Image (cartoon, rainbow, N blue to C red; front, side):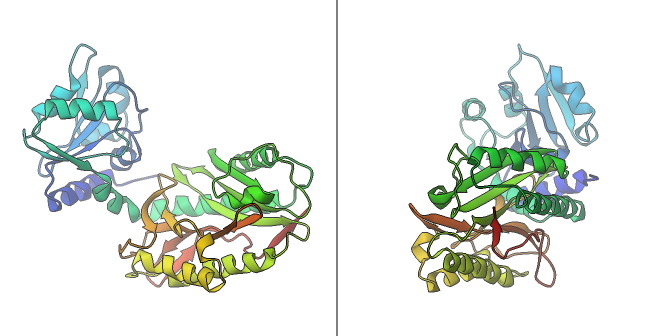
Length: 365
C-alpha cells in the first residue's frame, strides 16, 4: 500500500496545533503504523514518536531496533534517535519538550511507560491522543478503502462457504475453526476472531465458541473477521438450523429491517447518533428496545474497533471515506439472539456496503 506518510504527519501536526497541544506522543500500535509505516512490537523498551507542531518529528527507538526503523518509511521522515540499555529514554523525551507541555499520548502506550514520562515531566499535562489521531484515521483514502473492500468481499465468500457445511451435530468450536480456515483460504493474511454462538449462547453478543453441540432448531450467530494488508473485515450473520425456535423469524425480520434503516440513514453531514437512532427505532417499534444492548456500530480500519462510534451521544458528522459497522441485534436471554453486521463506507451521495453476503435468513443443515 502506497500510503502518503508525509501528508499524514502534516495533518496530525496541524490537528495537534489546533488543539493547543505541544506534542503527540505515539507508541507502537496502529497510530504509528498509520503515521510512519513502522509497526514494531510493544516492548518494555520504549519506542516513541514525538510529533510537535512546527518541528521535525523525532522517533526514539532502542538502539538494537534502529536499523529496522531506518529501513521503513520512518527512516526518511523523522530524526531517528537510538538509545542503549544504559540510557534513560524517558529523559530523552523530556529534553525535547517544554517542562509544562500539554501532551497527547497514544492509547496503546503501556502504563509503565506513561508513569515514567510523568516522572520526568511533572509539570506536564497528559490526555488521550485518540481524540486527535482518531478523527484523522477515521477518513480513509482510496487505498485504505480498497483494502477494506477486498477484506469485506473475502468475508462474504467465507459466509457463503460456511453455509454449505454441516452445523447440526457439530460443536461451536469446530465451526469456529472452519471460519478461521476459510478466512485465510479466501485471502485474509490471518483470522482475527471467530464468534460462534448457538441456541441460548446466541443471546450472548460476545460468546466465545465452546463445546456446545449445535442442534436442529438452533439459531447460530456467526461473527468473524480477519486482516488484509493491515485492514480488517468484520461481519455477522445469523443462520438457523432447520425451522428455528418459536418467534425467531419475527425477531430476525426486525433486526434485518433495523440494519437496513441504519444503512439508509448514512450520508455525509449526518450525525453518527442519527444512524444509531434509525436502527434503534425499528427495534423499539417491534417491542425489543431493551434487548438491543449495544451501539449500532463502530469504526474499522487498522483496528477492528476505532472511530467513529455509531451510538447515541456521538454528534460527529459523517464524511465521505469514513467506514464503520452497522450491527443491530436483539438478544433474548436463555432463548436465542440475532445480529446482522455489514461494514459500510460513507460516499459523497450516501453509503456503500462493503459486505454483500445474503441478509435474508439462511437455513443450514
